[in-house]
Length: 88
Image 1 (cartoon, rainbow, N blue to C red):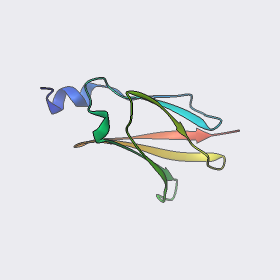
Image 2 (cartoon, helix red, strand yellow):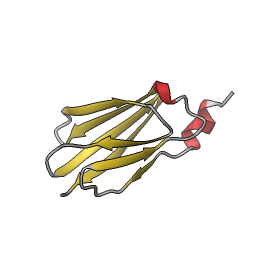
Image 3 (cartoon, rainbow, N blue to C red):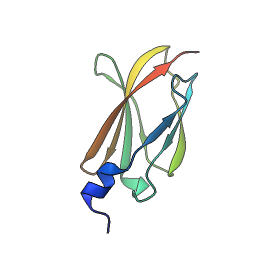
């Protein structure tokens, strides 16, 4: 089994950032991707979109107006916030 401490040390990769509309997310291979939730928030903290984890590496269609956003990656007790810029 993977301890929580080991999971916390594993990074989530996000690219390209800034994006023109499609953002790639790569999750640690040890994660159960079905337990991953990805949520996009605007700078006011309002939820814009959400996705369920499907694959270790998956593309997210941002389909939102240009600007700054926060992408929350949640896996069990682990939570990471990543600033995302959409600029078409």
